Length: 137
Image 1 (cartoon, rainbow, N blue to C red):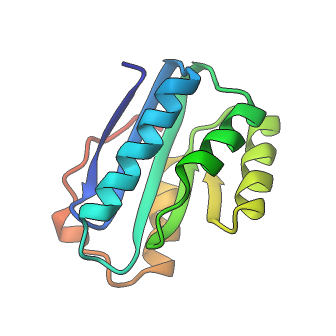
Image 2 (cartoon, rainbow, N blue to C red; image 1 turned 90 degrees about the horizontal axis):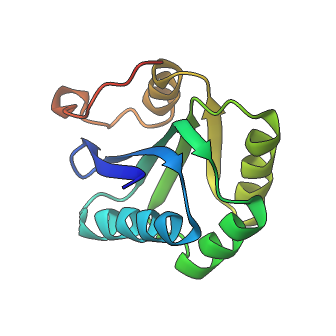
């Protein structure tokens, strides 16, 4: 499976690691799973970290936008941060798509940069519960 999803911080931050060739169906499934994680959380905002550094072939921007429109964003979606994206074109497309859908989005080179961003914008996160897999940045 080209993605693994888990809590980075239980009920507060979802962590998705993508790798290999990400098909349309796999992207749809991962976004639906993330939606379900958010649905299960009692928290008012749930953030997402998407690690795309090990993706060999991403889904096209057009297909990605169609899937995002289809799955929809959860009403309690907080920040969506992407880490380790190598392609400036994909970063730009992600930012543009997020703007169209009214999502809070930022792309970072490292997990550490993403965490600094989340800590700044959500001081109530329970960092003492951080139990997610650590990634090479």
